Image 1 (cartoon, helix red, strand yellow):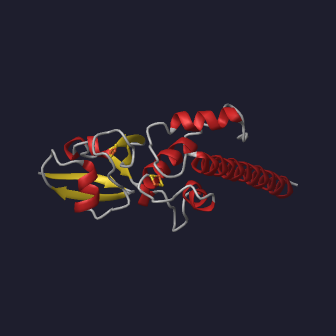
Image 2 (image 1 turned 180 degrees about the horizontal axis):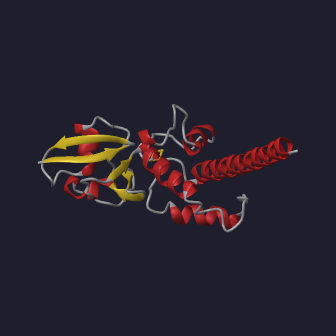
Length: 190
Ligand code: FES
Ligand code: FES
């Protein structure tokens, strides 16, 4: 069966059984081998991808469920050749060791940060016990056998800080641009 979908922002067509797992289509048909298989039965989160913006275990999704839908894998987190903040911080904080869980954790953590799920109603992310507990809760479906999770949580906190700083920077720049435009209008009108 031929099936069209969007993968990492690009239109793709695959020709296979509708029962083939999304995980296998990504790795074998589309050669996107960043997505890893751990348990193969929905328990470990290593195979996490975003399907229409929601985190799913790709080992439990049949490709027949993905027609005309959008899939984001770990390869799709980078923008213009620049890694997502969570990818950079996983490296910087030592939150990746053997790497089997890392792509799933990167996808899930990027989803958490990009959705503002740990911003807790303010424009700052505290390095607090509450924020750490919330991150552990949100990443509970992603099992890591190597790191003990502490360094992963450090990386997510650091990436969330980066995201807040970037959005603050953007909103300040937007206000400056608006103020400059207002000033130009006043000068032109004078
Ligand atoms: Fe999919 Fe473990 S490989 S959840
Ligand atoms: Fe090895 Fe997480 S880094 S399982």
